[in-house]
Length: 286
Ligand code: PAF
Image 1 (tube, rainbow, N blue to C red):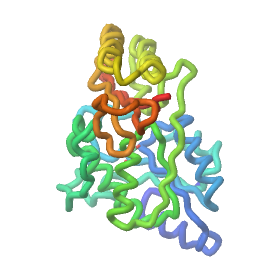
Image 2: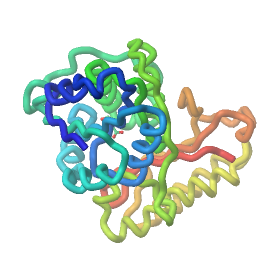
Image 3: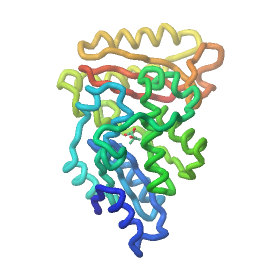
């Protein structure tokens, strides 16, 4: 597996005669890799001749400096994990390499992400999706992959990426992979590494409640049932719900009770702080 730290190294790898013209699948990550990331690499290698994974903790998508400082960085373990997969190369640039300085300058432009920026993650993390769009715009234009692979855990991010590719005519096929879960249901996330033992023990309640709701919600009981789940979660000593909502799976507009939940395109979305670590999850309504 090639370890590429600069655009120049990446360009050389892509331009070697044996690589030229081969389809490239791209798996962008922020490292602290887990089985969810590895399944995206496996998906990419089924569909493309070569697989490139990036590891870059992108500062422009963090709206809290503390969150960026504490984001897990596990470079050597990540390389070891990637070596067990069919990943051909890993791109692990510095902030300077990407943004031209050790601190990124102001955003050169604004991306039109429409309503995606004013609901759920967009509303609760101001600027976050602009930062995601900024880095992926750079990656997609310079790496020129045929396909890029993202996990469904970041469900709204997937919609942002699809919109970016469409509005900027980036010509990359976006492929989604399912959320991977620990045996107790907790969605795999790089942030899980930061949970205290007590928070790790309580965090599976997030998916337990989502799953319970997905089976019991009706157009009549939904406000009370959502409230009940918020109470259950907030009663855990380490958990604090930021939001727990039913929203449209494409537009992310909130459910208002006027249509049948089970026939419509509705999905459950949650953001919960667990010992100060912000976790998100989502689930279809059965
Ligand atoms: O999902 C992530 O890990 C990040 O948001 C991404 C897509 C790698 C962009 O920095």
